[in-house]
Image 1: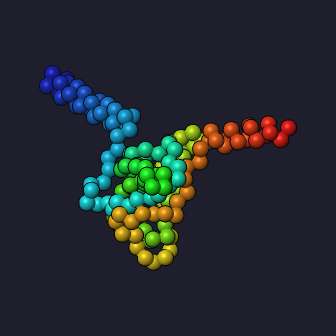
Image 2: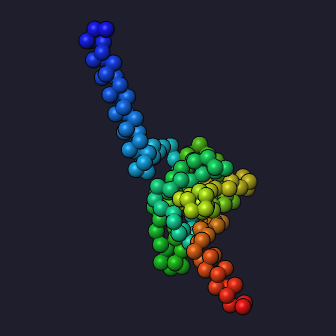
Image 3: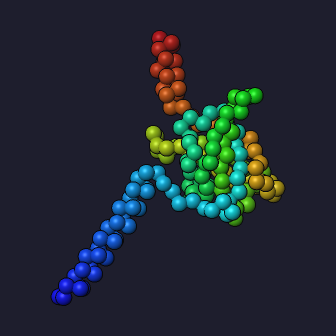
Length: 153
């Protein structure tokens, strides 16, 4: 083999390795490639408890990722959480869509699961979804079970 061909192969191997390391670094760091702003609509959901949900969390329909959480703020008048998230603009969600906070596995990260409705009236960008199911706090459930059982004895 000549030296030029060996140098080319080594260079290609190094380039593929760097691309693989870059992909690994982005995926391990929680980085995601998301849709451009023009290809999504922003919606808001009101929850009483968003424990574990954060900006960047996934929004999914039937387990398929369709968007991500942009920001979470506290609504001071009723102490509820307003979660702003973007979903693919090609989705036609009705105004009776339900937003629920679920977790991946028992102790996994939280995400918003959308359950599309069938009202026939499409959600407009910026609409607040009030039909929601908040996050279940595992620590509270365990405490109720442990101390509830202790109270009965």
